Image 1 (cartoon, rainbow, N blue to C red):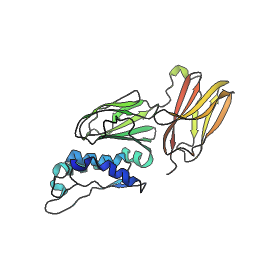
Image 2 (cartoon, helix red, strand yellow):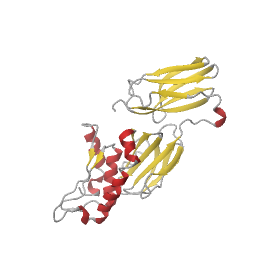
Image 3 (cartoon, rainbow, N blue to C red):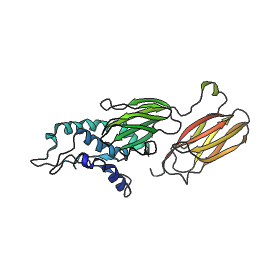
Image 4 (spheres, rainbow, N blue to C red):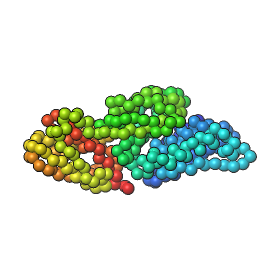
Length: 284
């Protein structure tokens, strides 16, 4: 309603509403009574706070009278028009069809104004970072366990001050800024000279709604350890830890206790590893 006066409340309001419904429409307000309406940066910030809460639609809330008419606020009106194509392209495909994770753990607890979320879709990871505070902030955001790849800014008009290294996005994000990235990920982490001895790991189905199957082929007898990890690399489940014989192996992962989200299956043989992403999406 009043730009910066309520900017920090948007995220908490949406989170509260999330408790009542799974699919939401974002309706950011573009006017104010007896106050200054949001400027372009504040309006963009509010829209993307809806996005990081995985809303499934966006509709500007406008009001028309002699003192409130969106086209009269040129900067905000142009911002609303610029956002529109951003929410029609590949980001919206990731939002609608990908596996969503809201990340607070990778942001310093001292930076309450910095929010982040990401979506896994078609082998890529889409990341949105929003700074709701009035100051530039230094961030370190943990990406999904095992993620490697090439980072690029998804929208050229938005700043891209963060860098990707060691599985983290780090750098400074300006006050009330929004940054949107795409990472084309390679999750195997296998060195070229290790490929000959490591099996090909398949997870079927993936994404999974119920139990899923881990399938792999051993070229000879090996001591094999297979574990399941959460987004930050914490081991959640040991699937196998034994000497296995040559040939094809199928192991079942019971997903009953797992929430929707991103997980990683790791197979370890002779201190060498393969990591494969597993998406759990029971609610779709």
